[in-house]
Amino acid sequence: MRRPPSRDLAYAFGPGPLSPAVKALIVTNVVMFLAMPFVPAIADYLTLVPAEVLHGRVWQVVTYMFLHGNLAHIFFNMLALWMFGTELERRWGTPFFLKFYAVTGIGAGVLTVLFSLLPFAAAQQLYQANIIGASGAIFGLLLAYALYFPERQIYMYLVFPIPARVFVAIIGAIAFLSSLGDSGGVASATHLGGLAVAYVYLKSGRMHPIAEIKYRYLKWKINRVRKKFDVYSGGRANDYDRRVH
Image 1 (cartoon, one colour):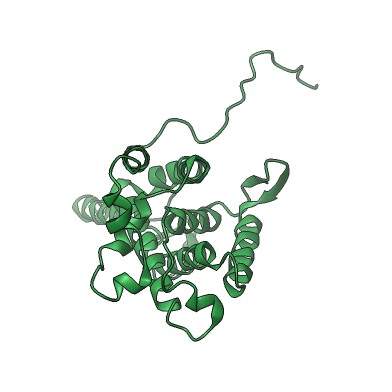
Image 2 (cartoon, rainbow, N blue to C red):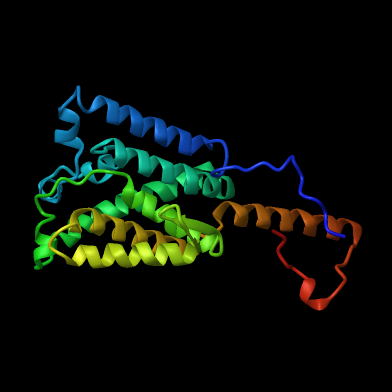
């Protein structure tokens, strides 16, 4: 028998309340954005300029992540940080989430500097370019989200529902093609760098760092109890030592 539609159905947008690290990152980015018009030195010293990094201003590969050029820039980056970062932080835990965010953001900056040294027109325009924004780290989060939730539906342009894995493949292709052109390569090279660093980092055996530690500790405790009470595992052969998620 078909159940009649309930009047108590609720619809939600996004992953829910902000997680601790995501909240701290959003607050930091907003504070820096509001301070930039009043303190011009922020942009002068903290913006990523590959030529300046190669001449000693190495801190710029970190600080550029917290600067944004206009309201739309920071709004969409922070929206993506909330929508995709919140669920990843809950799954990973705050320490690893912050580490991943830093590695992908800084890695994207470093790759952008290296890319600017290549003998191509699209690369050479980066050498003296001003690069700001959290997009490198955000693209890293997008790739991680696609790896963990590949079939989760994402509305591209808020209209077309597509799986997360397809969405990331599309934006990755766009970033790659844009980085080869004479225009738009500044941001796209950093986006592509974030994707590349995130993929290598997650595929290097660090997909479940906290979960792996917890699993090993729980397994050790169970084995101690088994030895103490002479309990032996039974059931199907392929059930032994199987992880429970």
